[in-house]
Length: 381
Image 1 (tube, one colour):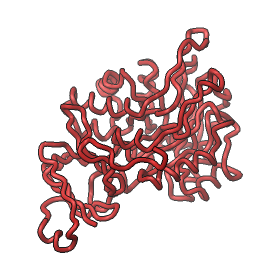
Image 2 (cartoon, rainbow, N blue to C red):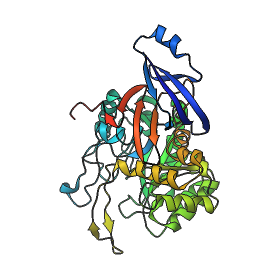
Image 3 (cartoon, rainbow, N blue to C red):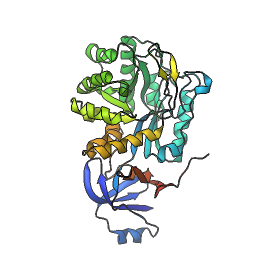
């Protein structure tokens, strides 16, 4: 079956102008002038989507999401719910990387793998990290390297907590070994092999990441550090790390526009910056004595809200869209994702940035949201 998206204003994320896109199966097979009458002869059921007046961009890649839910820091009742397909599609998220945070006891890697496979079957692209906040790193097989080599969904290790009282207080030597094992596992399996670090608000900030680069034979581009939304002081360190080749991730929040602007204005490497949702993770609030004073759940919609906020206030749409698409694909070495290009997966959004609305969503060529309405839901939705 063929689908044509015609006359949209296409950002790949690089601007391509007004173009038409031909989809067959899960792939984009042509961009440009398309002979609609010829395609109709090949496929009488040809679907044509008129995107005139709309912006067409790649589907959002969310590199940090708690597919099983998260939480539990304030006992069992604070465990957050699992992600459902509509949580993703309604927000234009067509690819995700699932992970486990603080609770590595009741949230297991085998359950995460099963959840990732279920969402994949429902239509989105899914990947996962082995491990959780704590050391020793929990794996599905016997080791990090074997997980990467043998488990199709596993693309790296994470989220390893540092600079946080909830971490295992890891030594720099322990972290270096995790990074080394993850790098080698990625090399052997042809995957990203990145180690994904959670940073808290402790007194040591990013010292351990700097030490990893300065004192051990690790590749900076295999380090992917998240939660730089927690303070300008941390973001300034992120800017410094980006120049060393480290990938920097902002958790989407009400300060995303401010932080992206600050990052740019102070010379951060924009190609090393991404934005994620932390969706369905917990958002505990602690006072200066580390006492819990509030609790909330991270929403997938925050990621999309901040994309639109950036597009509305920013003239460089290519850079903005890259933060949510191609930059993520680069750090995770997903060569068929993050762009609207021929032979890439047909993960495509048709959006109205001025109204901050998503009109249509395609994931792996499947039409999931049409004219602002969900037409594909999860098994139990």
